[in-house]
Length: 255
Image 1: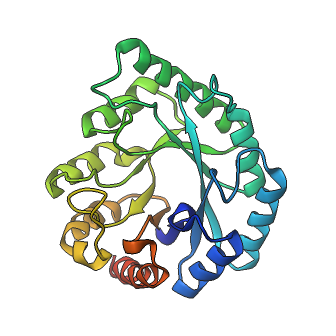
Image 2: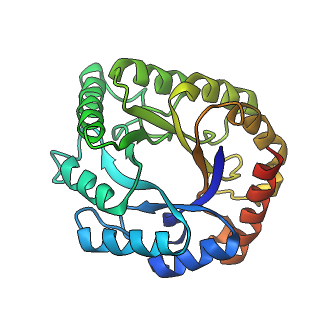
């Protein structure tokens, strides 16, 4: 089953209570809370408060969108244990992490293996307390191409490592579908938007209906449950969000 939700960093300027109210107004079911501003790493009290307000509003915590970068954050002063403890207090079933700080073509073998080994380590730590780890599917990291993203899952070779998914900017629909199918057995949540052809050109989600119809064909066949999370909207507008949320819920109802 696919549940509609929101990535909280879509509205960095809003307080958690305002985001909860907006998500309820939109009729969505869950929120991925960001670790950069809404639920900062290590702020256990804030995590507890945000979990309570989410659940008391009849919503679910979809994930913890951490800004932990495998292979570098630990050395840079952000221990994964702090991220994990915050996610646990938040009640997040999964933690989204970034697989490195460079794209697959720009990292050498040693750098790639540093990311792989750290992903394996944090997947084990999180798995011990029942929390999934999912990699961001994004440019500038080791999931910037379909081949590198699927290869990374094989290289890490840990049952608790999963991956998020979103269409790569500017990538043909058929290539996006191919990449989605490649990681489908380990798929966590999906980020939903219609940017074309670059991230600077945001369009109403409804404009991407034909493109997303191809993605839903794959997603609706997958077992288990996950969230389809709106991430950013044209003009960072609440009105645009409500419009796109209506589009998303219509699409999922048709699935």
